[in-house]
Amino acid sequence: MRKYAWLKEPYRMSDHIAVCRIMFYEAKEGVWLFLYSGPDAVQCVSDRLYDSPEALYEEWDDLIDERGWIGMEDPLPGCQHDAFIPLRVKGRDSGKPEWGRYETLQDGKWIEYIPERHP
Image (cartoon, rainbow, N blue to C red; front, side):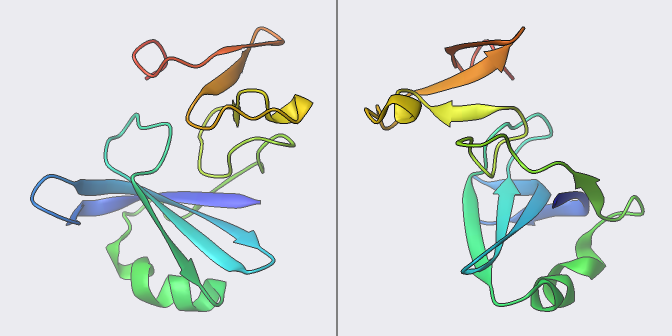
């Protein structure tokens, strides 16, 4: 299961990027933290790897708002772990991935993902 949270205040990563929401996902290699720059961002702008959920909580718990950590389902098989919608690399399912191009599940069909059309 993944969990996400809203930050009390934007976390400045740089002069141009402020994070307002985070998500974590436990994997074999550790716990991935994904950072999102906008309230409707589908994919993260950055990620970090932690050794354990406890290490992640220790660093971030004081920064999240009163809603706390909100559970959400793991992504569908083959989909991006950082995406808030079903999102996969185009062609990956057929063994011919088109890196940098994505598709999303809409009304039971996989269609091309165009960020401007899918906030």
